[in-house]
Image (cartoon, rainbow, N blue to C red):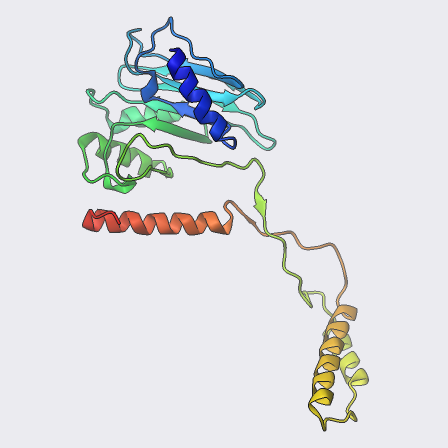
Length: 273
């Protein structure tokens, strides 16, 4: 037990941005008498309902994150540790799940589990269910059942690399929506175009000399300044427009696109570059 605690302590210290950590396959030696402690984290665990040392999950969450634990989900087929994390706008359920490989789990079983989590949730763990949709090389019966439940509920899947089912997935979740600053504009729907045309007509100098390169460049600069000045004077300066909202910054969306492309290539060729 002390060896496991030392390993987790070193791992979490190296990953300072990881606030919530879900553990599944490391808990398969725990019983109701076992206890895991990592400095700076609160631990919640769910054992196999038989009480024997196999299966089970745990969630480790930093002590400074506002949260509370939920009733564990523990059946022979699915074991899950559930916590509710409080945000400024709404709460979200975080779940660590483990599904022992020997049981038959149907689509209805998965849907029943998902129904216990509320409207917003993130689940991480070992499903022991293979499907091409999340990068496996084959489709198992259980994988087909889980896939059907995922598609029916319109869930998003984030899988690990295609060579291991025990590699970590690191997910950053922002409590506030990331905002793009609204780009500056010369005009808007309230621009007075009559006034704009009058300003341009009255203040444009038509007698400037254009004999040298310097004079041409100066004339271009002057007309540009006049266009900006006319647009500014004929456009009411109200409150700035509301910035456009999106969930992910550009570099994350680009990474997701590339990941999906590589997944398709793997599924078609089963070849890893």
